[in-house]
Length: 240
Image (tube, rainbow, N blue to C red):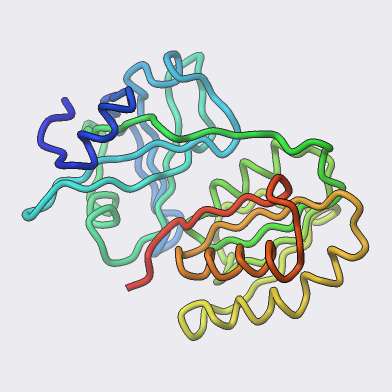
């Protein structure tokens, strides 16, 4: 396992990444554009442990070269060695694999780079910016931060998607995807400063497409002056 992965695989091997073979046990179409799989972990959870927003790199074969994509673990169950994977479906090798995946199918996964550093002090308000691709991580984060209120800018629609927000504590602001993410950037620029002004210990979490994430992260750090330890930003996908 793990052969023929090109330079990405070689770098991960040098970093002592751990490889595991996952086996699909269940497949469900949550919506026509969102698919959920359940897998056995091949010993992954016992070896690596579990933390909020935990993710793994899945390896997909292609005619030109192998490549990997990161996916958040959903409802990990260490006792039984299982977890879920949720896919926002679009064009691409990962989505193609997820669409056709059925019980008994296998896929290689690598654990390296994932981690979660709990903000200290605890957030008095979570301000999260995400989309369908990062929804599993948003759900995990909401669970990890317990009673903290949250405002979530969600690019796209939540219709039929498994959002774990509690209406009593979490406000969802759905934002249509327009102009390759520029509309989301405008909304956040217009609304985030006022929320930060009234929050003593904010925590901003950003996970959209790579370009939008970089733009918003730079804005929050440079224009709004938020300390680095109160910001987490990670691009979850690349817009074509």
